[in-house]
Amino acid sequence: MVDLAFLLVTFFMLTTKFAPEEPVQVDMPKSHANFRLPDTDILLLTVSKDGKVFFGMDGKFTKQTLLTNMGNAHNIKFTPDQINRFAVLPSFGLPLSQLQSYLDMEADARKAIIQPGIPADSLNNELADWIIYSRLANPKLRIAIKGDLDTKFPVINKVIETLKSQDVNHFNLITNLIAEPGVNEPDNK
Amino acid sequence: MSEVQQQGGGDKKGGKVRSKKQSTRIDMTPMVDLAFLLLTFFMLTTTFAKPKTMEIAVPEKPKDNAPKPPEVNEKRVMNLILGDKDKVYWWMGITKPEVNTTTYSKDGIRKVVLEKERDVAAIMRGLGKDPDKFPMVILIKPVDSSRYKNFVDIMDEMKITKAPIYALVPITADDKALIKDK
Image (cartoon, rainbow over all chains, first blue to last red; front, top):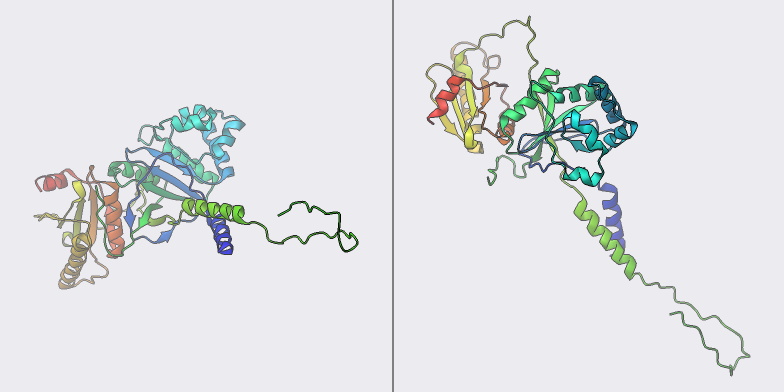
């Protein structure tokens, strides 16, 4: 029994990948889509229930390049310390103007901040810039949208239109798999 | 276990000091406790359900000098409105639309799409056209109050029914007027 216990411990230790910290709780819709999202080269656009857009990307070095380029384009000088902090940031939803002060904060203070989401309106579309520069930093990037069940469609459409304006015509919608095939279960809303 | 052997003075066999045989068993209880603790921890933190994803391809933004898209016989056009409160409205064609309401369930929209696909194929055959080349065209129009779930559901249904042509189009004022009193 002890042997077995250790076997299981080893198994779980090796297979566990800690879920990255999310700035918002997102309840994903279900579908029959059965294509597994790759683990790397993902740009994750999380759209919360109240229509805020969050940006997340993997790859420490690509994120460093991304922030440097993004700062150059918007005339914001990020310090090396801020860039390093940004590289390990899982996901964020802030206008660029607020990003510097956010990066200067301690991890505990950051959690207390309510992030307003990345501006994606046609007037001030920072999301488009983030997408351009992250694709420049990592050309292999695959774009995935993770939306909440109750996100209103116009918000999602805004994100899709932004992607389209960048000639991103292929992207992924992250969903949960429906257990029972053939039924779109009604959720209890 | 490891108490010091008290040697009495009067040993019989010439007072030879013999080390006491130590037991080779060790107490494993703490280790096993720890093992189970770790086991529980990793079991609870593991995320088994890896996210699945739905691939979506949208048409390119039309270039300014792009040729006009071909005209489509309205008989093979199906309008799907993703309405408020998880309702789906649908009708065929443009002239004299008959608005029907259905749901996102298996017996709802999926049945309708498959049925209409057959009907369209029959009509096209009647017009002497190859139904494979002139399949049904589905226009998906979400209203502003529809949810993301509705969009995912309908995309899922499109994949399940293997609908050949479907497109996401913005809803028009005429469409809104049609579903208003439904």
